[in-house]
Amino acid sequence: MTSYTQHELFDLAGAFALGATSPDETRAMEEAMASSPALAAEVLAHAQVVADMVASGQGVPPSADVRDRLIERVREEPGGHAAAQAARKPRRSVVPFAAAASVLIAAALGLQVARMQVEIGSVSKKLEHREATLNSLLHAENHLRVIHLKAADTVVGPGIQFFWDSRQRTGVIHAFRLPPASSGQAYQLWAVINDEPVSVRVFDSDPDGHALVEHIPLPPSTRGVSKLLVTVEPRGGSRAPTSVPLLGGGLSGE
Amino acid sequence: MISLDDADRHHRLPDSTSAARPGYTAEAAPDDAALMRLVQQGDERAFTALYDRVAPVLLAAILRIVPERRDAESILLETFMQAWRSAARYSEERSPVLAWLHMIARSRALDFSRSSARTLRLMPMSIDHAPNAALAAEGQSYNPSRRAEDEERGRIVASAMSSLTVPQRTAIELAFFEGLSHSEIAERLHEPLGTIKSRIRLAMARLRSVLHPSSRELAT
Image (cartoon, rainbow over all chains, first blue to last red; front, side):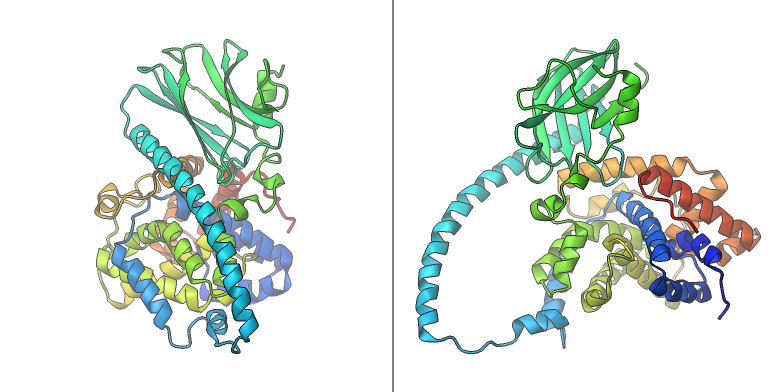
């Protein structure tokens, strides 16, 4: 096997993450990574780029039967997953008092489950509404403008799509990967109009990092609006931004 | 009041979001790595959740190499079976889950394509053209929230790709979409191997700096 200098190996990190190295280079990289955390970290950073590229393509949902076959195969796998097998090992028989205790626990759990079912129903309704709204927005026509608000890490960081409907004179905030604001705080969206920030809406996100805020009154045109910004403010909102913007997006061509 | 210059400078601040809340993502909506840790413990539900999350983009990647849908779906199935069997060997310190799964899928797709001597469908493969609406329409629709996020991510990556020079971009696309090694790319483009290596290195560094500006450049 050819020997490579450390410098050469670092130069190969991108190609290695991309799967473009020769078998000889691949072996050299794998061996070197085992003893060089710095090289492994370099490869990881490039592999993140590859993951972004994979995730950026429009997905093609597989047929439903692929999923069914996968589940079936996993369950029938001879030898199976080592950890799963261990989990499936028969355990020692339970003693009678443990059985009695389990009845009490089951009763308590039953109450908890009932409460959770109510919560799940509420969350499901909310999700259905969010998805119906987004579906209609994604199929909207020319009167809808989308402004993308980004953070520093544009791929894995939080983001907002702001849908500006000039016909309805309303807007919709769709935030994702945006954690709920800290206690006593909220997010505030600002439109910078003629160089002055004007409050658009105070909002917060759900625990899953999403927020969907509809029916936000807007002027009919984006004229004079140069950008949208989001800051963290006290829960009731502020008259002017009091913190540095967390997310921002420009409106080109206005 | 902030100035607009400040705004431009500071809207690139990630620290007060998820990065400052370790565990948030895993608790509220497990990310790929959190799911994979459960898969490594033999959790079948986490495995199917991971499948639901990433199978569409992996199938799209496989279809670029193996255009026959039935074959591509078989490769997808085998990819996940391999992932299930070798989950214990996965290390999140070496690769994000999606890149690891993509590497398995791509390797299987290339093996299939080469062994069966099928004609590769070498359609003009570019990250701009990668979404195949016709193929997507054949499948089930998927979560619009997810779709909105994917579209946003696609836009960002396409923008990063457009920051590359044409020769750099060609080299990346040949490696990524067609699975060519840099010596195969050199042969295809009739260029010296060193030139291709250099293009890939510079292109990957550029993509990294655009997509993950906060990632630390390590001294070599």
